Image 1 (cartoon, helix red, strand yellow):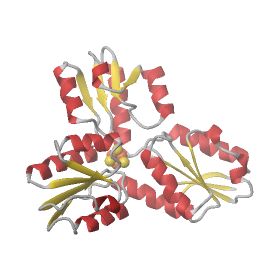
Image 2 (cartoon, rainbow, N blue to C red):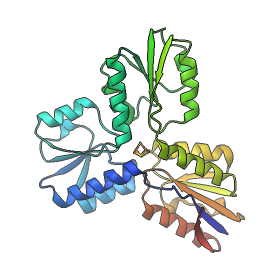
Image 3 (cartoon, rainbow, N blue to C red):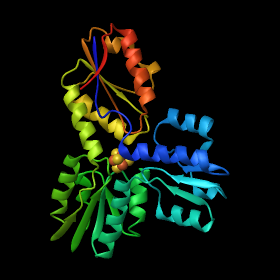
Image 4 (cartoon, rainbow, N blue to C red):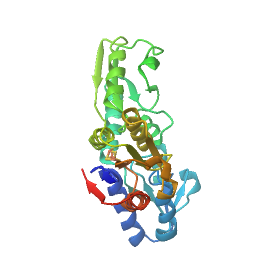
Length: 287
Ligand code: F3S
């Protein structure tokens, strides 16, 4: 059996940067170190950080009185930043520069008088953070159908959650054309996501079975699994190697593996090794 690992599988630039910042912080910072919510959507990494680097996840800045707070790659709400500053908590801002840019675009559009539309999942912390930079009256939509309920506006400014698909952004922009005479769009979709999605789709089309590795709570990993499943119905989303079912790869001559932006190399390595152990090697090779 041939095992092919997508070249872009695993940590993206922003997550790698946040993890490096967390590691430096753990070496240098005195006192307790926290993240607001898990630093990345991967339970195994969060557990390791707690055990080995004494970095603990808290849901809100209200639960922290002193020490250091690491702002994770998808950012936090502006109010949380301000509260941490007021409390004199040391802030290490590991917000991905692409997310930061999206937050700035929202503030700019608002300042220029646009009714701001954010394309994304309104419950996702990245979106909650982005929205907070526009103050009030920001609309979050996740489909072109939701645009139908929006009132007509003079001018609409649009940004997207960094992990959204370009197709969805296009659909929503088209729908917004019927809602305002002036539309300004910033394509804030992160290139890392589209490259990973494209590579994974291409790979899914050439294999008998596709394994997508990453947190079940990771939006970008779930989306990756959806995209791969549309091409290859035999697609399975797992968090760790132990979840692999021998029946999935039975009879397969080529198995593809990809992983979300918050999946570390060591977990991908364990999955590759487990697939290899369940079948006959030749072992992994890059695309
Ligand atoms: Fe940043 Fe893109 Fe990763 S926005 S956190 S590099 S998926």
